[in-house]
Image (cartoon, rainbow, N blue to C red; front, side):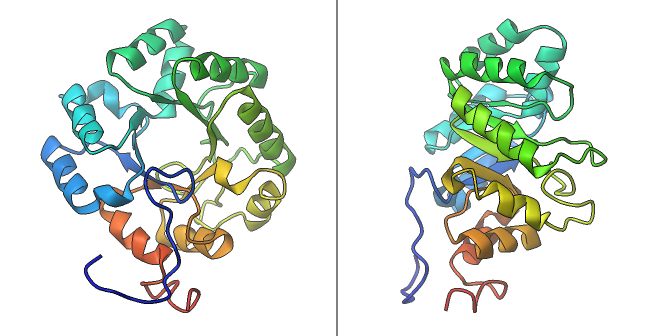
Length: 251
């Protein structure tokens, strides 16, 4: 830090398992990645290439190498996994993970209908190859999943071998954990936390108000995802009470 301030909340240090910040890369250029690493690399724990953007992005291997050189792992969005599954190309998906040297993978079923037992089989299989994050929740705003089912799916996916479970919100933050207005489904989140260990959940929270809400509920070192590249440093100030939204909360 550039100077000393007393009595700030204590942040975990990288490499960490709590206080994760997952950034969504929706097509940054190599120069933008270099700039992001220079300014915010210390605060980024992992990067997701949004949905299936990795399919069309040029110089993908070069981008992955840039992140790796900074000690930041990355992974393909869950929609790409679903695209391979929908085309009966799971073996091909496994091959591209190796081809691009990825150590993480996301398993989701937000865009396709998939029997949950089959999803857990994919998790178990991939967990032998990479570290798996599994996403729970639908991308369909009209599909409301009751809390008991969120809990049940999170439990079974962790048992199947997922390292962390992701609470769905999309990059817009208006489905899954949130109402279409972006408001947190508070009862859902609080009920999930009665059964699932907090450190095992990565909450997608792209909007500032959502980030503030989770930090006030769970503390400085809550795991947050789908953070825009230009919001990494602003989020870090929210985490440690140096933005008006949490200024009084941590004093």
